[in-house]
Picture 1 (cartoon, rainbow, N blue to C red):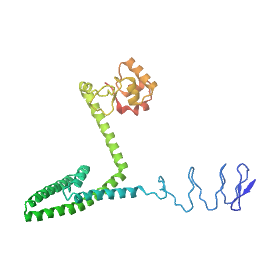
Picture 2: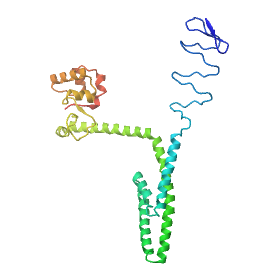
Picture 3: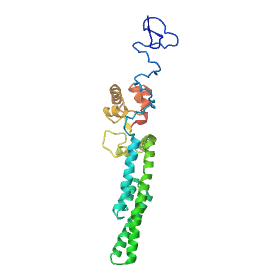
Picture 4: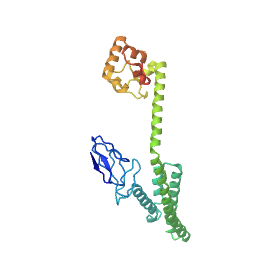
Length: 291
């Protein structure tokens, strides 16, 4: 049996056994027919308001009347720049060095520290010139006035520009954060691999030093970082489980085989005597050591 559609055509009812009308898409069970001109939505999607533009994947719509985060950040940074630029003005130049001290501490660059020292020297000169002018020296009064004006105006403009240039690198570093995290993760992983290689070499060439450094013994207090090595012949069962990821049954089998043999000499022996699949140990071979 069929029912008329809103467009004058007919849709086949689910379970009726009749094919849909020509040019029409079959309806899934429980689905509602679309209104004229409407676009189908993906699973779980919300219908859009008339005339609304689709959003890019992963973006969220901004509520009406709300400002975007970029606008808020821009406004805040502009106010901050104005606040720091006003310091040399209202302090009559005596605190002209303060904005550049803030930048030097944040950036930790040699150039920023040099600029801060330069303004600090200029403030000292300003104090000296004012003290000389206070003794009735006309030339000193002129010099003092010039330094004050120079510090008030020059430092204000300089600090406003400097704090503006500080925003761009921050935005770039924020955008590149995923790549930076990837580089840091790679560096950490490679560092741990190198430490394991170095510790394994110490253990093979100098067993006494290895025992002194407690290589492969995360169950003991120590200061040497061996990159995560585990001495299968020495550590208790909970370390085999927590550090190597062995299951309780596998730990039981390894401990039983170790008690019977006395010690293992390689991961292949662990596989053979503890009856663990070779591919199971291949995944953790790089962390295993045998003393």
